[in-house]
Length: 335
Ligand code: SF4
Image (cartoon, rainbow, N blue to C red):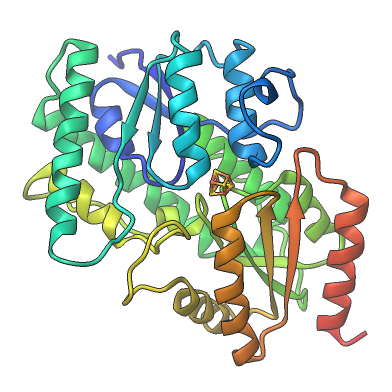
């Protein structure tokens, strides 16, 4: 018999979901919503990204009260600020903060990550009042490995799907753990694009890419393809397996690993997928992706790969995005 799990919201791409799952939670990602309740702006300045603003806005309006808790990993300044505000203003949804290190290389990283994971495990156990059994951790690791394998298999054929349907299915998976990918609809000779950005972009963007007759052949979204690229080992120490997986992922812009650079990964993807161009879909006011853009754009320029920068907002305007994406795709087509 399946026990009923308590939903746990999470933000950021470094939350050890397996640990929460093993404690009886159902981790579900909290996506930013286009609508606004008018609560968040009283606490956050106007130059905070909509991803963070919307999470707080939804929480203050009671729209997240179904959650038993929220988990955040240390990433950008905006989410660090959110953690402080959350504790003070959203007492009905307890917060678990996880200290993911910024540097992912060097001898201290593993020891640091293990200490953070043990501390998180202790806090979760104190909260639920139940120890997390080792077999439960192994079951959850296996469960997430299966889920990730399903997503990787879908990504292997991403170019065959209509972009809006593919990314809607991915969002559903992160919200409900139920993959529901529709049938493929190949579009031969469509310009092949790679998208880069935080979270999972904006549904309007995927619709626009589809409308202009292009296909997405991969992404470097914080919560996209990279999030599913590595599994945790299913033997040894379970916390160590989780730590090694977190450290093995392509870093997001708030993390650093000299031998595992985002620019190198992006160029590798462009080559492997035979991509015609790259679209950066940065959330307005997102500093980490703003700095990251400079490095990646230089690498693409050196390699002669066309790219376009778009800024996404609370409610992105389809018309404006379409004009820019259409012009970019026509340039790629040589029209
Ligand atoms: S969009 Fe940028 S600033 Fe906002 S939470 Fe994500 S990484 Fe942080």
